[in-house]
Length: 504
Image 1: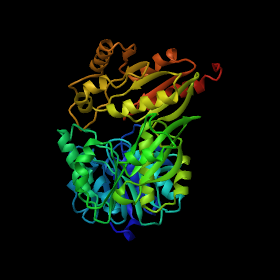
Image 2: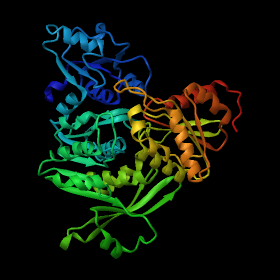
Image 3: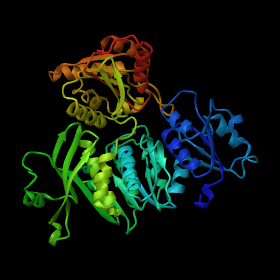
Image 4: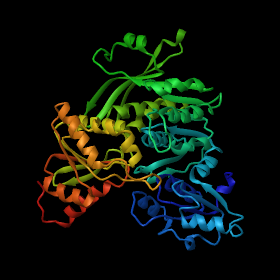
């Protein structure tokens, strides 16, 4: 798919509401192509992006949805020629589709990405935030990149940016080894934390996908990595280009005016320290490795400010700073635009208030993400009672990380676990939310943790329970990779309808 051929084509997507397909569809539509597609009738967060982009969505799947005039058909890897009627129709009518390019989503995205100066943001956690943040900083600094993010970004008014520059910043996913379709010039690798046990049967198989990806970086390319990640330390040697590391130092022993101490411990190329929290924002100072003898000198870059909360977002910010400097963005521009970024949807996103309770939605679905999100929210809202509604995502993940899930919610004052959001690609069963709730209670009892834990099967039942439970000053956290945000939507809708209900 050459750059010239990106325009004036009729392109159809099967499984259009998936976050990856939505961002690619929006990008191709903004390039002047006629884009449409199909999916199930359920409403997802991507519906708004597609509606704003004026992209037609047909429901349900039906061969009659496919346009008569068609140049390219792109399908989600959730579907295949056996389980989807539209793809089956394509397979069974080769004469009609002989001039149509039929590609899976990762094949299509990789084909476009590889024509640009491709900057791939990958890793187990944080890639959506880093992709959007980096894209925002580059765009505001005048670099005019193309950017594709796996979530709606309010400051983009969608999930993509279309620029005229050679840069193509994309969130790329390791699941099903989608990385094999990409040939990056630069890679930002946040972390490697075993996930997707339905596809990767062992942690070693999971890490290998990233190792193979790092091997693709050319000699003139670069790799930006977290120094603290143990799995990354094992594979970064495969990089033929430059390796740029970052880290955060915490603790009272590192004072803002002790540059000699900083220089002595500078084991990363970019090091954040003097981390402070003021008025709902985070501040930190940064030094970078200098060019002195042995690489032990340090250059002070100044004090940075960000709106996003939590230690994990300091690390995300460092990844953005390091990459932006590698791309020759002036330091003053990095500071300004880093501070102005407001985040993406479904990442600690404030939905509104219900009877004085703050509603926050978050995509966290892995034990590590759950712990970091809760830790960040407790830091940000130390005096609020936190009630968490967790929607486990897939039976395979819940079963594989069962013990870790059971000890991931200790910061929450109350925990409600909904029934598991299963995937059509996995065998259902093998564990349950009722069993997980019981395991959490056992863990809490063994460690002296006081926490109310409930298994409430459905969102309807959870909303009914919460209406009578939530009070002024509480914080309700909706957590999971499925559609748990609907709990917040229903609470806010019911509150809006009852206009006579007093605000407490």
